[in-house]
Image (cartoon, rainbow, N blue to C red; front, side, top):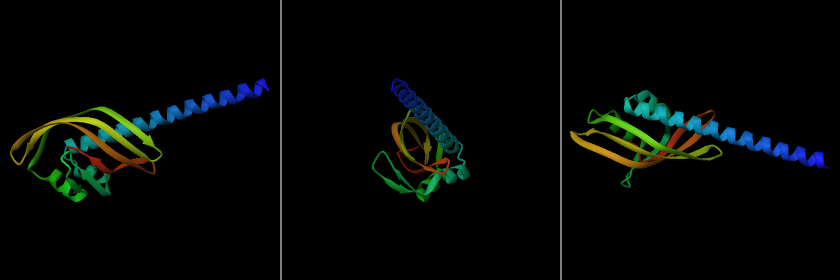
Length: 143
């Protein structure tokens, strides 16, 4: 009986370790995804942004504005929008099955339509796992 109890406790401990490692792997995948998204945005890599944003992507701004993927891509590609620098910190992922809510702090500055901007905002991005990769179906707000 005692051997069975020790065996059950050992199996539970192994499951807990495997679960923690799985979560760490997912969090690392999410951090890489956010980094590649930021790199694509910062370098105006339209092809990468189009791959990253789901066809039904919706953008919710910090001012309550709701925009379509197409509207955001048009602004992103516009020569009016120039990002001089950007930094994302305080990244935290909240995971449930094939969905992640990622919170972070985004600081950036640049110009839009000749006017300088300086942003320091908290962001939330919802990600969905599609097979092995993460995809951004919705976000609020993003640079």
